Length: 140
Image (cartoon, rainbow, N blue to C red; front, side, top):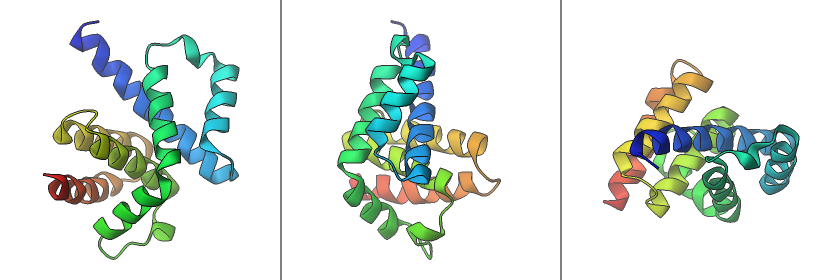
């Protein structure tokens, strides 16, 4: 698979992982169950990005408490309860990726900002950039 095919697949995986994590939080359901049900309903398993989306969702679900502590300690003057759910889902995906080095930190942050600009508020991109930037700096 060429780099051009991998990049959109990873971007789609991140976006769908964010959607699943958002839905799971909104419905107070297990992320893996939401992913399983959504994937079955929409036929996601046949897509090349699905394996990475499943890895992200499972990873975030397994490490949620630690990721939330990391996000909370890296966000100035914002508690998790004050964050828009979409932003929190994007931050969880980004923090998990930074912790597991799935891509260079600059790519993870850039992709998270792209998702925020697409899915959330006008201010979310800058906020997410700042929080994930602090997490990446701590990891360097």
